[in-house]
Length: 416
Ligand code: EPZ
Image 1: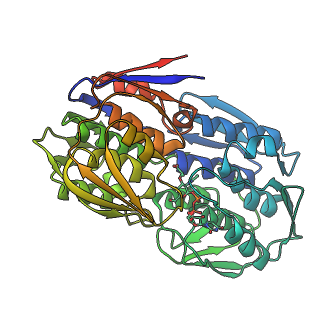
Image 2: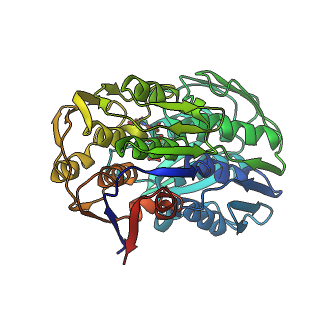
C-alpha cells in the first residue's frame, strides 16, 4: 500500500493551480443518467472517486470517454438500473445514481451505503423524499429497490440539511410530472453548479443556492457541455498549507467567494492574504492567533475544512475550540496529530487545541479523506520525516497532490 513521505522544509513558495471540485463533478456525472444524449464535462478532477463514478456509469451501460480533465458520457446505451455493492462500498456518493435512475427508468436498485469513518450517515431523507414523489421503496439484501411509473412533483421538507439529498431529489424532480419544491435545502456551491448543468440539459430549476429550490418537471433532457467549478476544499487545504509554513503562495484557478466563512476566520487569525476573483495570495506572517470555529452547512464553516484548520491551530498562539456539528465522529485525526506532538483534547463534539506546540515527524495513519489532508498540512512543519499510511484516502479527493506540493517547495514523495 502506498505511503506518503513528507519532510518539513520551511516556508512554501510559488504558485499552485486548483482543480475542479470533486463534490460538484460527482453529482454532475450522476446527472448524465437523465439524458440519452452526450454530456461533456470539463475541468474534471481525475481523482479516484471520479474513476469510480465513471466505472459505475459503465456498469449501467453508458459510454464513458475520459480525457485530460474532461469526461464525455453517452447515455443512449443505458442497459441496467443496478448500482452494485462492489462499487458503492468504495464510494458513498454512488447514492447519487438513485434519483436519476428512478426518474429516467422508473426503476433503481442501489446498494445501501454503509456507515463510514466519520459517521453513521443514513440516507433516510433521500428515501423519504422519493416516496413522497410516489416511489415504492423496499430495502432488502443490502439494496435499495425503488419503482415508480413516473415520479410526481411534491413539496419536500428536509428534516436535516443534506447536500447529496438535495442533489438527488433535485435531479429526480427534473423529469417528474409537475412541480417539486424543496424546503430546508442545502445551499452549497456544488448544488448551484449542478443546477446550472441540469438547466443547460433542458431542466427548469430556480432557487438553487437558497433554502427553497423549485423544479418544474419536463418530459426529457438533452445533452450539454459544462465546466465544473473549482474545488473550494482543495483551495482551503492549500491556504492551510501555506499558512502553517508561514509561506508565500499564489493559489490560482480558485473561487474565493465559495470559501467566505473560512477566509474570514483565517483573516481573524491574522493570516495576511489577498483574494481576487479567482486567486488567493497567501503572504508570509510572524504568527497566527487561535480562533474558535463551529462547522455548519454552507455558508457556514465547512466541515470538510475542520481537520486541516485544526492542524493550523496547533501552530497558532492560544487555545482554539473547534466544534463539529455535522458528523458525529470527525475527530479521527486528533490522535494522529497528538502523536506528532500537538496538544488537542476532545470534549464531546469540541476539540480544544492549545498552540503553539512544535511538531515532530512520525509514522501516522490516514483514516478518511480530510483527516489525511490535515496530517499532510501538519507534516509540512514537523521536524524530520512523517510517513503517512493508507493514502488511498487522499487519492480519492486530491488531484496530483505530491506534484502540486512539490512545485511550491514541499519535500513530498510517494513510497510504495
Ligand atoms: C456531502 O456529503 C459531501 N460529499 C461531504 O464531503 C461533506 O462532508 C458533506 O456533504 C457535508 O458538507 C459529497 O458531496 C459527495 P450530508 P453528504 O447528507 O451529502 C445527516 C468530502 O470530504 N443525514 O449533507 O453525504 C448526515 O448523517 C466529503 O469530500 C441524515 O441524517 O452529507 C450528516 O450528519 C465527506 N439523513 C448530515 O445529515 C440523510 O438522509 C449532513 O450530511 C442524509 C444526511
